[in-house]
Amino acid sequence: MSLNINILSLGCSKNTVDSEFLAGHLINKGYNVSYGNSQKRNDVVIINTCGFIGDAKEESIDTILYVCALKEINKVDKIIVCGCLAERYLEDLKDELPLVDKFFGVQEWELLLEYLDVDLKGSFQQDRHLATPNHYAYFKISEGCDSLCSYCAIPLIKGRHISRPIEELIPEAKQLVASGVKELILVAQNTTYYGIDLYNERKIVPLLKELLKIEGLEWIRLQYTYPNHFPLELIDLMKEEKRICNYIDLPVQHINNSILSSMNRNITSDEIMNLISDIRTKIPDIALRTTLIVGYPGETEEAFEELKAFVRKVRFDRLGCFMYSAEEGTPAYELEDNVSEELKQQRMEEILEIQQEISLEKNQEKVGKEYNVIIDRREQDFWIARTEYDSPDVDNEVLISDRYKVEQGKFYRVKIVEALEFDLIAEVI
Image (cartoon, rainbow, N blue to C red; front, side, top):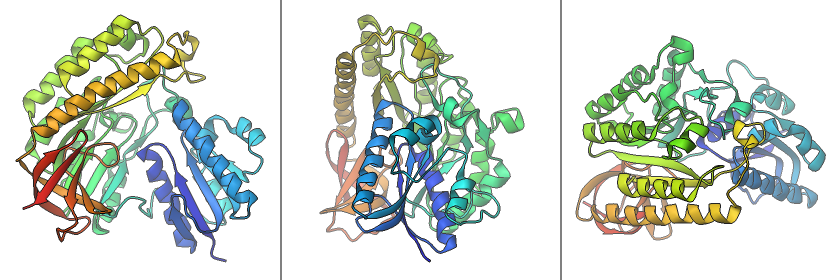
């Protein structure tokens, strides 16, 4: 019997990759697989959950409850919950969610497939079925994390850092490019840490050099490059190789030295500023993205003012901000969570307001200039595209009128004619 299986992948792009490998094996079995909230009736819904911070856990629980409601009206036969939340809170979830048929942790893909009568032959990390448009793919190069930041539950959930060998990654990349992928977005908990466990040294630059040998691969993008022990030879390679996007995701989290020390970030304010200066000196045209955490235990008004001044001074091209979430089992959980939720919310909004002004000013500077863009999709009266300075879903987009005859997944030269806070309006040249 051919089952209809719907996969709901929550949280980060690394979860997306796992869901895509899962889908590939299910399709090979002959099952019909869809992504997202499918309106049709499904035999099985698989929810790949996130358990990283409070908001993500809440989204996961809400999604499970929604699918349980569908099961009660016979729109779903079986519910499977897997991934980070299931790994972290298995017994609690079993007690609270009796309508869920089965739970699987982050390393139990083979058991999940076996439950659905699929015999895993070879590696789980093969035969991907993309949830993204066919022209770009997230490319997970390692799992787990050794950084042990005080607030982060990822090492508790995923374990220590494990790199995938270069000789395993390159064939996968070639297969993706052969299937139509033009942009690979490298993801991991810490991409610049890649290779230390296998080769006793960081191997992100050698990996990139091997990827650059693949014909048809137009863009390579890096996310999650931690600032401590950042390999500047990576920036040298980016400067030489135009196919590596001038884009660095550099999650600094905070700038106050006391907070950085308590977070166990293993870097100081001065070292962060020097790194940013070095990167921008080597590549003035680079787009820098960061993420910040507000409301960490002990974040005084003075420390927060220092963070605001940092955002104004550095003028990141892209910035995400999160409220601190006290996570059981982490060192920071033992600290007094002494910043109220209301103040956390207020501080997050202040940071985002500052960044909104910066983003508008930076976008206005682009008016009249020309850029290469890739067309991601069509929405209503516009084609939605991206420059090399933007990652999908989290960064700015370029809107192009649908009067232009362009195609999804292809590159075009455009001229920016109008700037909004987080979008650009362009005409095709």
